Picture 1 (cartoon, rainbow, N blue to C red):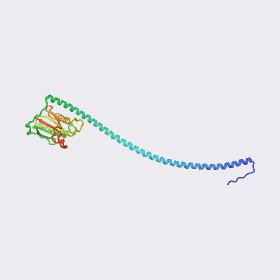
Picture 2 (picture 1 turned 90 degrees about the horizontal axis):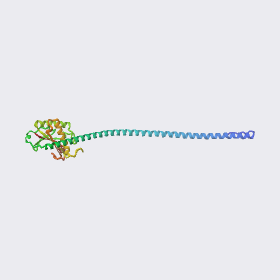
Picture 3 (picture 1 turned 30 degrees about the horizontal axis):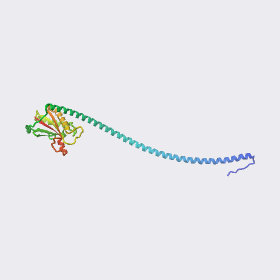
Length: 273
């Protein structure tokens, strides 16, 4: 404890000395209080710094997680864009195919009109039975079709599955082309001066494409394709070839099974020597 010695001084000096002593004591107390406040502030700053660091780590983890999700979404969108591009290409191919089919249909209808007008000018085509053909039927490869005498007339029956790629197609396949060449050669060797009526027949199965109005339209288009192919790749000229179409009106087998329907979808070559 501080000791204060009172000197024998003037009153004014004594008062000043007392004030100095009091001021010094008060300054020491203020310094201690400020140091306490500074320590408290420092502790608070440390806590807030730690909290900020914890929050920063949490935010960084959240940002990384969101970035991974965004990357996954971008990859998914890229895959979907690729799928859409592929579908667009397929759709364009389908549009091209439809346009080609429409063009083929238009040509076939035009040819049919020309043929019908030609037949009308000639008074129609009639193929009468000829019994002299019975003993000399052409030998048709059984994998292609059959030859038979039907109602006094020789007929070569070829299932359309051996000529066309699909049930909706009227384009003759490479195998179908070879089959027609083989049949025509056999007919030609037996009946050098023969005429042929190309008949188109179908089953009653639902039409596989909206491009066909009905079964007769499909049968006509197929018969036209066969007639045109025979005229192009064989020695039969157009004057020796005619066509007719019966649609599903003359089935040879019951249409209640796939096999029967396949047999009824056929081209018949009616031979007139």
